[in-house]
Image (cartoon, rainbow, N blue to C red; front, top):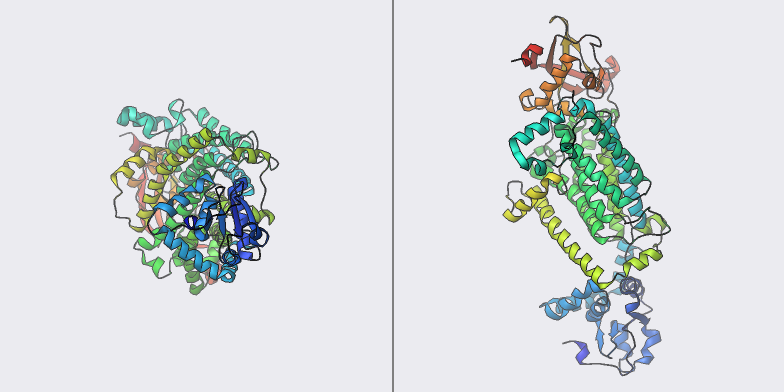
Length: 626
């Protein structure tokens, strides 16, 4: 039974009043957080100052629990007092409702409150351990600025990197011309093609328009990077990059392309609606946008770890995965070569570190401040180590940018930032505006949460089918790449096949084509190319894991070499036929391995290889005429 039926006071306050123990460090810290949440709706006072005003309440009662005195004189204590105080914030009225209507809620919360009240020194210790000295509601103004500017920089890298290659990849004389692709899609899909392949290239698929999309993306990325029109810039960047991703076909089908689109779309909800982001006049932080972006980070990290353990690949369970990874990853760096030489115990420990970060530390994303900050530092450290040993273009930078959202303003300045005048006025929204915003929030959450939950669940049970309503919902949004699943290196590649492409003018003497970044010359050290992504070099790694029949683009690539198409040969480091095209081209498959320390000292080679046979026998332009 509520204490409101047992006790009341005659000198009722004009505003709800919460009375606490002013000598209790634990109480004082949490009162500051509640004061932050309730604003001017509730007054707070230590009982050492207020007890004499309410003689109806014994001093011993004040020492044992907080008391909430309403404007009608009714008195509530302990957990109910906390809930009624927090209930003055509209977003937390559900606590009072649960206390009054949910069976068992009141009993459980009162028992929990009593345990904490009897062990306040212990509670104070854990508060300092997990939150530090400031437990007030965190703000993220610095993190928002750093995240959005970082996202602008990552978009800039993505557009510039693609711009340098777009002609050879999907241009009119490229390997997979976008004009032919859209024409075939229209013939096969009819009017559905516009929805299933949402790209501005439907209106214009010329090389000039592809350059316009890349160039416009660069300009708008710089605008976001410098803080101008953040929300409008994000909308344009999403549309431009989605258009290029669809047009890019297999060359833009990487997980980081999809991650950039999902991050960019969710950032639209997080970005302030203003002309320019400035520290002097901060806009209110969107809790919805912040939550969705943190959920994306959680999904990305957790799924990446869980799929490794549920894939059936024993190398993750016996901690031998990194025995293969450094050598077999698509584009290793020279640091990857050195890491491969490390003792096996070190590689096993590194594998364990990866799994712990991705399956345990991932949950710290939702933890109190200090654990959340630790998670940020640990996850960024993992990304830096990955970037050090392998070229994963802008993936690591994008993950690090998402990690920044875990750092509240106490991390940047060692104190909580008080929002400026615009932020204060923005937080006191009118009832119609607040209602519309809450309804919009519910709609967005009902849209994203079920699909994200299904993706995370699929990492634990890959064979399980999705509920039909969620699968149908996902089918509608899948073409736009705004909700996706992730999980790199589910199954560790145990060998490294490499395709060596050669041309010949007479069928007797064969000269190799040299790629910029993928292994070829045994004496060429692995190089660092990230955050630029040489998309042809990357696709060559995937092509080597299958056959040319599974990679139609590869046959088109050889056809372009036979024609000496400048847009394609420009993607290579060396074209052995700079003047006249070859008469024949062929592709041979080799197994590549890192050399050991002793082999490298003896020969100077970074790689060694054994021939496996023909990947594609010699062909000429006559083969394409039939």
